[in-house]
Length: 163
Image 1 (cartoon, helix red, strand yellow):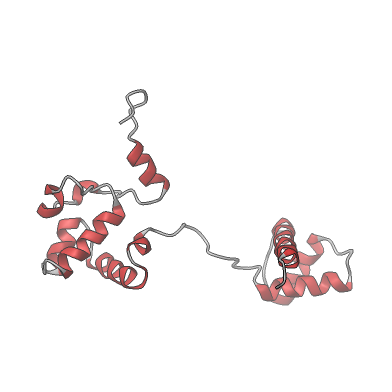
Image 2 (image 1 turned 45 degrees about the vertical axis):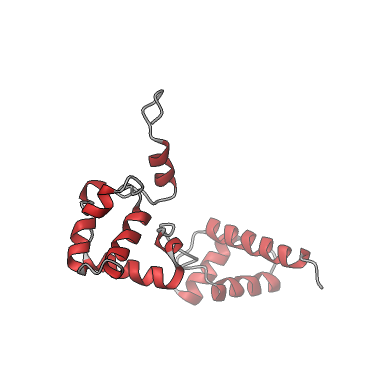
């Protein structure tokens, strides 16, 4: 704990990595709580130990989920994540959209086709064309940003050394 501002560096690190357990007080597993190594604030460690207690120590799933403060679905999700990606797969992914929802590759290829035919088109005109063709409302600035990302990606590809 930092005496100057009362903050705990480990809590700040866990929070920054999205692995701070929001309910550490719900972790009551006797084996886990008895170990000085185990930290109920560490979400990855708590989920890993919950799965380990079932698989290695052979306690029932229902007992393990209660002792670690989770529902059964969280247990089964943790098992699936561990089986596929190991402990690193227990780290929660970034929240929010994982990719473009409206400006997909198909839409952007259409935009690039329009621009190739008529380079003077403005982003507002492109937004109208997208709405007409795909029935999507897209802000003109979103189109400008998507085009800039695609140009940067194409430039990186062009700059990559060929073997």
